[in-house]
Length: 315
Ligand code: UDP
Ligand code: MG
Image (cartoon, rainbow, N blue to C red):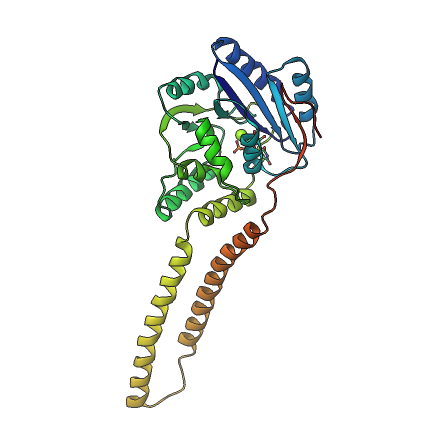
């Protein structure tokens, strides 16, 4: 019997876990031809999330969990999960039920047809503000232009991955992770299905704008060096303009003398150049920061406790 692992990163999700567990249970009961594993990743929750998961695990041997030593963020929670899934295929799903588990049988069907990565694209984004929709649209267009790999629009982490995709992802040990790009980067046969994304069933979103901006910059800098190229081109352009301007100045001064003046143009040039220089330095800094973080080669996460059917409780 083939085994499907459901990977659920959870951070302070006590309000939704019961509903989620119920719907996953139903999924498993409706698809008896597969064995299921529900692998919860507790990402350092401060509420009762871990207690609830532990309760489920005690009575239900399909439930496994990885309890991380602190909150590492969803990206790291996902790789921690991928490191521990045991299924022939893995479905990554949000704990808040924004991704309906009822879609999973369709994903499994396509997987059986030979697809390695069946991802769910959302039709609507109910319960999200227009600002979030707009910024995400602009961002993805930008990202798409700047990178050579195709990054799926309106697609989250809700997808089914074949074992070999999981093995591929496990080999990518970057610490500042942009998993969404990695799904594309590893390749393999992809299949898109669409769905309507529901609003969060309960609880609060963990995203805020500073977090999203960081995530967006991580996305750009981890998959493309285009910003570096742009700053080089900008530097070149400014140099050419400056050179022409110098020639004009020299000719003008030698023909017509040098009446003092030109304060506004001087200020404009200084401010513009200062701006361009700071921007370029910032861009270079972003990449140096990444180099710094990656060269430390720290482990991606630490585990407080891992529990699964066959494993002994280990600390
Ligand atoms: N999550 C996590 N660690 C975090 C933040 C979020 O594991 O630091 C999980 C969270 O429990 C949920 C998923 O990531 O299962 C998506 O989070 P959320 O619903 O807050 O994001 P949104 O749907 O608003 O993008
Ligand atoms: Mg959500």
